[in-house]
Structure formats: C-alpha cells, structure tokens
Length: 444
Image 1 (cartoon, rainbow, N blue to C red):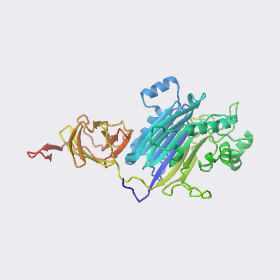
Image 2: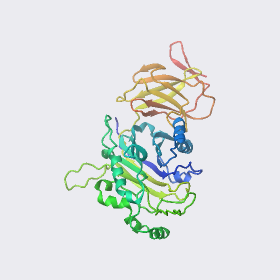
Image 3: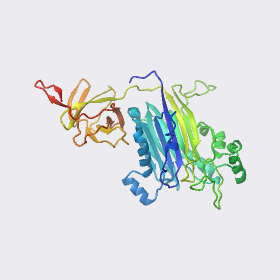
Image 4: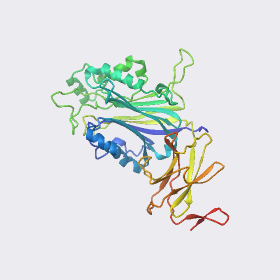
C-alpha cells in the first residue's frame, strides 16, 4: 500500500482513575480538558479501577452499557469521538475513543484480561489490554490495578511482570508486546513512599517539596534496579500524591488508620527500541515514531473517590505507513424512495468477506453498533465492475431530518472500520429511476 512521506501528529489524552465504586461526576470538563482551547485532541484513552462490581451491578452492566461508559460517550460523541474499543474485568475498565476521521486507520487486534488476584483466578487485581494498529504501527494499552499496602512492593513488581508476560498473541499475526512501537501502561499501581513518616510526608506536600519524596517512591526505586522497568518512561511528579483522601474533600486520610499519602496512580509509556548495530551502540526509538508528554497532572477538584484522577496529554508524531483507507465509499443518491445507493471501491490488498457490512450513522454516533440502518454488502449488490461496487441500503424508517450522516464499511476479517464517507444529508426529494437504456438517472 502507498506510504505517506508527510508526517502526522496525533494528540492523545490518557486518564487513569480509581473511582472507588462511585458514580460519574457531574462535570467532566477538567478531567477531559474540554475547556482547553489550545488542545485539538484526536484520541482519548481512559482507564478506571474499582468500578462498582457487585453482582447486581455486573448483571445490569452486562445487559446495558455501564454508567461510566455511557457517561464518557454522552460527553464525547457530540464532539465527533467514537468509542473504538473497550475491555472490562470486574472493576477494571479500559476505553479507547477516537475522532471518526481516524477510524479507517485504527485496527483492533486483540483485547485481553489478565487476573492476578487470588493466585491468578480473581479479577479484582490485574490488568486489561487493548492491542491495536494505529496507521499500521503496533500500540498496546494496559490499564492495571496492582496489590495494595506498603509491605507488598515485591508482589506489585511480580504482578507487573506477570501482566507483561501474559500479553501473548498466540495464533495471531501480532509481534511480542516488547516489539510493539508503543506501550501505554497506567492505572492504580499502588506504589508507596518508604521510610519517611506520616508527618514528614504531610509537611513536604504542604510546602510542595516533592524531591525527597521522589527518592523514596517505590516505583522510582524499582526503576533504578530493573532494566526492563527502566525502559518505561514517566513524566515528573509535580503534583501532590493522589492517595489517600477522605471522600468528598481534599483532606488526606483522617481515619484511625491515617494512611500515608502516595503517588499510587501513574501513567507510563515505552517506545520500541531499534536493533543496535553493535554492542556499544545505543538503541534509539524509531525516528518516524515519537511520543512527547505535554501535560502530566492530577485533578484535585474531583472528590468522589479516595483517589484523585491523573491525566497525561501526549503528542504522537508519526510517519503513517498507510495513506489511504482500504475502502472508499460515498452515497450516490436515492435508488428508490426508501433506498439509497452507495458506491464503494477497495484497494488491491483488501480481502472482503460475506459478513462485511456498511452502516449508516448520524454524525455524533457513539460506537460502531450505533447505526440507524445497515446492509450486508453482498446482499443488496446492484452492480460490480472495474473495482467499483454498488449496493443499496434501506432508509425508509429514518424520519425527515437536517442531521448529517456518515457511511462506514466494517470488515469482518479485520474486525474494524476500514472506510468512511464524508458527512452528507439525506435528500428525500431525489431518487434514481431507470431510463429506457437501463442507465440510472436522477429525478426531482
């Protein structure tokens, strides 16, 4: 497939939050940076821990959308973000949203859950992963919840390694996770601040003197000793420790236990290293694929949980390995009063399936199943020649509206959207009628 010489920059906003079984907040603007006029985001990656996972809650969430997913879709879909993928394991939830223009260049390869609680059988702790190709680069996203308590640091590191080892893709044409171009890893990692007493930590926070606390942060210490962990980068901790707070306040724990504050909620990333040419050669990231951190902050205004949410905003600069979508499609007009004709073509290396379908969506749709009508591409085919295909889709049940619509082609083999049309309006007063020579002509 053709490559594109011009680079592209994608802005990605990552959210991690232990929500302590609470419902979504009333105002998401600060969390999602919706009021930041200088941001032009392309993707949201959202990881939650400790969602309500009681039996009744899980049953309801299985039958309907969970309240947090609905909350984020309600906010983001009017801004042209579509839920691309998600994975849930008990209280862990991972969501990926993207502007709809990027959908043909995002392929979901795998979703995976790795429980580490109760000897690896219980999902109250562990990690969830979404593996995808972004403009043909491999990206793995992991949301985790590691064991708590000061004394369990070795167990935390063991679970970190186990989650990484379990990200295997047997039977799939996917490289080892350490060969992926980017790993985003975040969550409630539960690392604590060692040695210093409660009073010293509180005074350091009060005076924003974090340097001494960094030195005793368990994750920072572990990275100095572990070569693989050291490959994961993190921004500077210039915000107060995000745990543990009294709920509905900004006061650190005042209960009898008086837990010592800690940076439990973290965002890490790792770029693939290029093969070295010699034993003394430094292995550098791919020059055509780079990630830069623009913001790494906590959000003190949210008080529903005993954790504060942490967000990281990144610029991903890449040279796309694909420049055109696999499918190009567009509406042609009305075939009959109730049917719209669609033309589409595909690239030479695209392998179609009998189970491929085209969906008709309102602009602002929430996810790929949020269509207003659809058609199996092989069912309503009306012509096929020289790589151009035409099918018709029923629009008879769609009321008159001034809304704009989109067409998306979904590939069953690739389990992803591979083509998307430009926005358009349904023109009810126009339809196509066969002329005596058999050619379709527009009629008013």
